[in-house]
Image 1: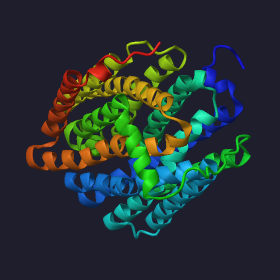
Image 2: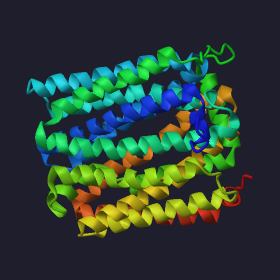
Image 3: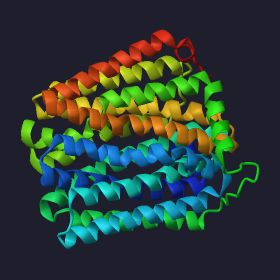
Length: 403
């Protein structure tokens, strides 16, 4: 492989896996834009958009710990084949019901709950599989490549979705997403790495407690999880994007796709930069600064009345989020034994997915009471406050360094 490529891409299994994930994630991002727009057309209600976040996250909070135990006890590759197939079926049902004209808010909420249940088992297996595909010295590169790929998909997916929504409507988007999951399934079936069941991990309550005890013994991991939750809880506002696009910035569905793409565009640029470079040693301070910059940029977006300024603010927030995410994911995987990675990931997932999804409910309620601008801008400022408070009360994270 050419030397200029990120080190993680020199490994065949990971290279194929990352490529398939890029295609699948692009389809998923397209689907999510289409679902949010469809729900907005049905209801014209910010609260209804916020409630979608609840149905996405409730199954994850309910089943995530069990999903982590399953990921540690069984073959992670086979588990992913099942969960990816389930997610493909959800998108296929969305396509069929929309084509038949029988779509409705309750159906969208129900399918979001089914997808959330699948993700509760898929995410621990997916994140725990990556360290088995690359050597430890290439793990930070793999995290950067994976996160960058996700952000690239988040740029391409919403941008394409905006065009397709204006041209053909959501049916084609749902169909493309259903097909995109086949790429991941094909790579998993042909992967050289063969995970094995771990008989030392028994499925049950004691296994869950073991994962919780591990996180409690690791102050840096525990603090980053809490920082992630509260930062994204207050900074979460993406489900209000249709209101900004249609009513505040007056850019319609095409502009909606661009708005959705702006944050991951900034994230992708930051991820590309990080993927080819070693992380700096003072990583604890860098995480705190990144969260503060993320919150400040979200606040600017909420207050902005200019489409270009809004795009720039979203791009800066995405870049800051990438820096924080890559460092957090790398240190968690390096500090966690392989036998506990599924459970650590599931606990972390409850925080990093629970924060933004529950934050969407909070943002929808505040937007209904005080307006969307106040909702987003105040949330961004509270995110900055969270970073400041964490820096003050957590010396372990503030002083964390890695050579």
